Length: 78
Image 1 (cartoon, rainbow, N blue to C red):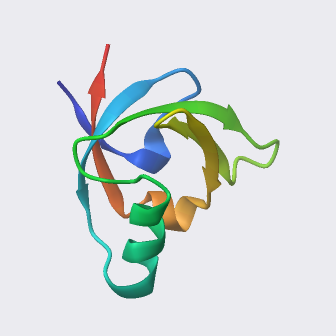
Image 2: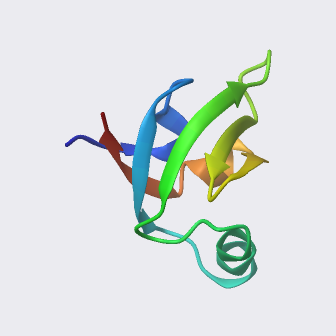
């Protein structure tokens, strides 16, 4: 299993959230949207400019900015 930043996932790639290097308001907002350690995630869309990317997490599609996705470490899965 390969570790990566969430922002590095390509469309169609799956991963599991391992660690979030955030705190305060951003951490709480991400957790409220389902970004919790141990949760499966899939990159489903990339905007034409490359930022933001949309991820399927817990049955919902959520777009987040690259600068926020760079603070989330994931383990890629097959």
